[in-house]
Image (cartoon, rainbow, N blue to C red; front, side, top):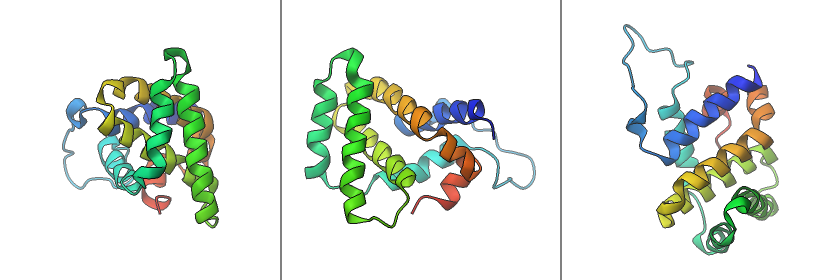
Length: 155
């Protein structure tokens, strides 16, 4: 799958994750549904499960770093906070691939910020998209795209 297609799908997935899921017109297919078709709502739902597992004491200071960042530094602050969170987890669970940890850390921080700083949701959405597109697009492509990532790589 081409990087440009992954990046477009990343936008759809993260938008579903952080904004109103009803944004997408979900059309029921005729006949059997193809489990390998791209459905950003389903993928966002699986990612949401991944991001629900966090320690608030660990993530709270990272959220504050993003909140304090100047408008033009939010993407960098988000990225740095994801890296910090990921490094903490790698110490605890070194057997999990670093890309999976980066994805989980980005989702976790994004969802925590949406819940605690709803006024920053659009900024966090942009920061998440930038982070995933810059750091994980090729890994997502190697896995076979978002559908494969959501099926095989979540845990």
